[in-house]
Length: 325
Image 1 (tube, rainbow, N blue to C red):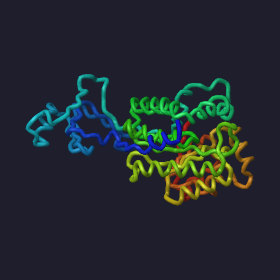
Image 2 (cartoon, one colour; image 1 turned 180 degrees about the vertical axis):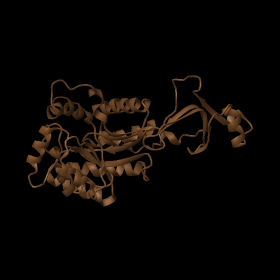
Image 3 (cartoon, rainbow, N blue to C red; image 1 turned 90 degrees about the vertical axis):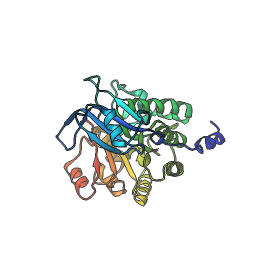
Image 4 (tube, rainbow, N blue to C red; image 1 turned 90 degrees about the horizontal axis):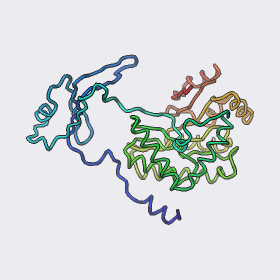
């Protein structure tokens, strides 16, 4: 897609789907939620009223007539002013709070279930990098990102923290699609300037320029970061030079951005990365010393943390750690 076309495409105004005009809506049926850790609550024949701004106005348990209750509550004189979403006809249906997926590689959606006999690093080279490099095409990016968002939404994921690719326009497109389709999202333009294929790598300067362009796009689309927000995303330490990690760390600190990366997923990976960065105490220390750790940092996997790394993460960093086994 030519640059001029890209400029025109990304200059179009996009309104979040959730801001589309709606009536006062009453959701009726079984509701399941966990008000506190370890506690499950189930409400049967429950009516929940939501105003056009998206604010819950009432919760009425064991409601016999949701329409009549809503009409009385709102003072409406006509049922045409009210929307009733009724799933009480089945014991197999229920409402629940939306899921938040804190670690998802959107471009890898077609590779779900593919692994074979490869290890982590081989899997990247054989399956992942070839697929992600194709996202230079916005046609490819639109098809896969649309399917990824649609599938996750259909599974109840209302918020996702996405890894995109190194491509500027495809990362911007992911944000726009999330807005259009109504999913809250953190958008991470992946940064990687070493130990990557020749056709899927960027220089330090290219990464800086691309990162700033994606940040600008997201902040223009959603200045208050209510629906889509940027997340600084070094792929992992092995794919970034020390120079790039430090620049990304300073960028994170400059506006207290969210940050996401990988940590201690695989023994071979840990050995390789600590060998690449002998000036640091351990894998976690790489991120600490380059200012990538903070109270809004998500670290994926963390399967093989050393005790000293656990102490490092709990000692004043207040880092959110995601463990995926």
